[in-house]
Image (cartoon, rainbow, N blue to C red):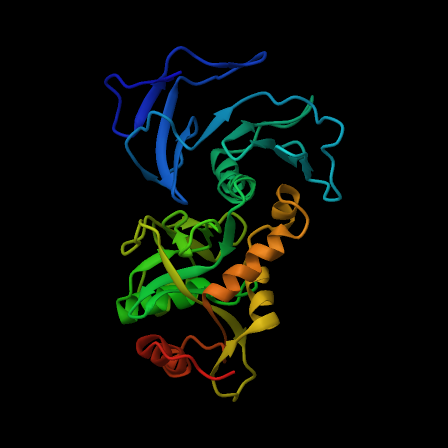
Length: 343
């Protein structure tokens, strides 16, 4: 049954008419904002400035609604205290702040505060942090897709993704290659592969870059006026940054970034077999959520299949912003030539 009716509202905004009800919980806002992210059409009661607006769709892929959530049911508890889940639902609990309930890969319910006597609810920025992170990650896992923690660019030899542990330099590398080589950005932080597709297309996440202050300075980008990261005061968000490509593109290669010792030469090594599989598994965003939403072993099977369909590398280089041009030469040369270094 259609629930959207646009009358005299800004582009990308519609009105729910009449207000829907979920049991005893009334939807509190009549406005819906429409966005495109991870290849999904999203209709949200919350405004999400990090995302790109789009025209309303008669049947959005997923909705984000405000609600008062019911208590957790039997069978929903997991070994991770902040996660409660069963076969079709996942609830993320942040005590005295908010709860998020993700349902069947199609709906996210947001409760701003939890419990009696709790302090005022989370700020809009706090809500968006959890919503665009763990909640959307859980929704993607419920669809049995593979959200990957990486930065990616469109290079002369196709889309290359760069991954590694927190602080490995994924965003720094992507920003540097974009600004110095002119290669278009595809995604930063999280992007998605749909395992059921024959070609491993990478669907971009929010069009933003998260960069440290010293990286911005090295690229000649002023931090004044940028959105500051909530958890790291020296990191900034470039929202809707120039150069992002909105369409899905085939993922050709995944590069695991590692730090080399001082004086060690930069090196690029092709990974195969178990090493390639382990690299893909380590790239999956919130794998604990993925394990809850799939049959046992299915997540590992999907990671193994992806490792066999793309090229996987390990790139070791000294960490130095001043010497990036020198240290990243082996990687840039391989990308431009489309070469596959020997293991």
